[in-house]
Image 1: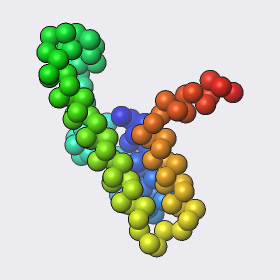
Image 2: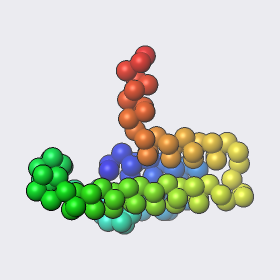
Image 3: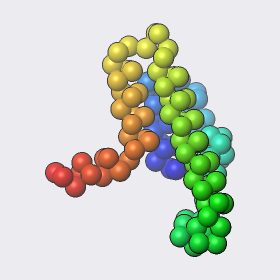
Image 4: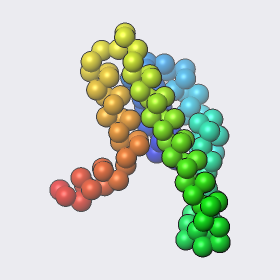
Length: 115
């Protein structure tokens, strides 16, 4: 979540061009940022996953659905920001790259391993 917050700060500062909002996002704790985005941060027992799945598979699936819905909301918000007609093509491309890196960080890991 901290990585997503850092990327949101960079995106807001360099693509959107709103230093005040970027400073505000940067000043939030990780938990405050997650709450602002409407993302529930899982506690250690939920991260175990298998244990919860075994105890209550419906609850586990509901939690997964909430996480996916939050991710879709983040993607939608990022894309909405990029639809601003005043943005240059370069800013749109950088914004899309930041959005992809934010939402799919494992792709970056695979790239580093391949090198």
